[in-house]
Image 1 (cartoon, rainbow, N blue to C red):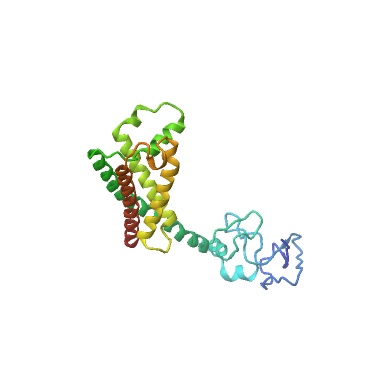
Image 2: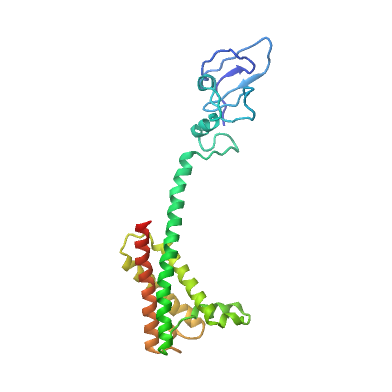
Length: 256
């Protein structure tokens, strides 16, 4: 960083108050001082008045300091006028930068919250449908992801994973997680909520039918262990979950 500006007597209190110039250099000699201060524009480093208790970098030169005066808000005024990086190793977060990041953070948090609420309600509906199918003796592909994770772990499955309560808890947790993923990936897509819900449902169903169920030995869409009615019931409950998530998410976003 090239240093241009003025050369001024550091101990001269009543010296000339002309502002520093980037094109001229002026030398002021004083009989009682040999210390020389080199200033640079747009910022300079100069000896501080006795009233300041700690050094301040990036002070404007000469007459600006005398005109504005020193007070407790001086550093904030200077920081707001400085570029993000004025001196090597010196970083300043201006109010404009903080305000530009705040809306984005707020938008992301709002999407996640709306996804959690929508997903919780939608997964309860999905769980109720699958429980009703169990009571009607219709076997569905529920629990395929948990079975795959236990298989990939390579260790004996803990006893708790076989309990009905843990399986329902895992199912609801995965549903909320998928709803949050939907909110982040599809939430701001300019399309109808119904269409976005159907697209997400088809995508996840294909992954489950082509990857998860074959890896646990049930074949494509679980055809080796499921009847046609069971596959249809699972696909219907799965689609209702994503469509309900999309609709509830859009409604929740409008009310926030």
